[in-house]
Length: 416
Ligand code: LLP
Image (cartoon, rainbow, N blue to C red; front, side, top):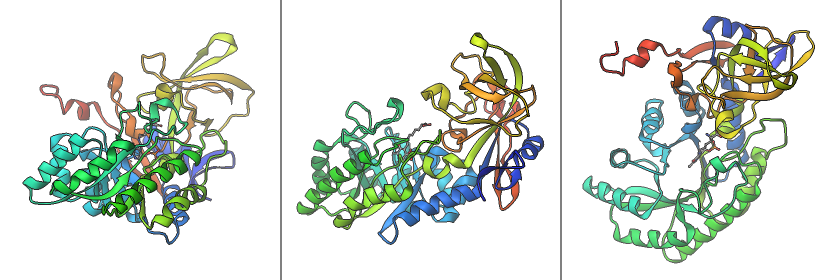
């Protein structure tokens, strides 16, 4: 058994009791299962079998250094959305040739550095960006490997805040303009077209839009080939969803089948950028109840020592995360609104949750918080970034200590 499960009623991570981990390191605390991360990576990798493919783990989901290193050691490449993520990836061991650099607004400094490093591909978002990459590459006497991110105007059927593949979204270049950009590259000596990139959105729970996007980009790559422009890979982006509430989502095998059915006949290698699928279920946020009080309609408020500063997803997207007592009491169930300590009404982690009666000091686990949890945490209300623990082979290791007020003020002139 690996991941999060119950042993004698108490929630454990890879067999290590979460209660003990929280007592040692305090709360709020992120705890990750190394084995869950490795297995998710391997499952996806194996789903693509012998067909040429490369997984570039999307660091934006969770770029904690220990996790970046773990994925590097597991054999993954990296997808970075800022030069900061590129630098973290390189320090974690990823080779420049194994990093793809996506992102909608690359600054001149970012382009400069990316070109110097010689990344596997810069996924370009516009005609203007291609020109800037070309100029930077020529200035350094190199050719930058690029892929154009196309926007196929396909609805991924996901939350509007995390949908990216529609023409109304800011991402990429409309497919009908992309051909011109590839043809122009023959006059841009700093550019080497190596791929085509598409990313429809995140938490996609049907293979249908993924299949449709594959159809249009493969057709497009064929048209380019007929014009003498030969690419190496199709980057299908990230987006594969996970089940937050137990409902059925596509498996890695179904995802791979949907992509390969279309890409295989083209012979082009598949690159992909999964984030959530690899780390989402592999992390929990542990928090303690700091206050209890009656709410409207017979509900109770359970106020935790974690909130939107540690896990912003419920406040930002209304996302659902399971919330469970680490060691449930033998008590009658009550209906809780589970809220954080931040001075915002939207600062809640879950509504209408039936849990055995809680007491102040009880430890709760907010499940499936490995992706876009820690990575989106903030210092709002001067709350320190939480500590993080990685459990591997029965050992729970602190991989990020809790931020202190001194850490925060160290950046501020005259503050310390
Ligand atoms: N590639 C690109 C170009 C992306 O924009 C993203 C995510 C990914 C890959 C990875 O997507 P994934 O496999 O993790 O779905 N904060 C939101 C999700 C934002 C996703 C942004 N881009 C959330 O918490 O649901």
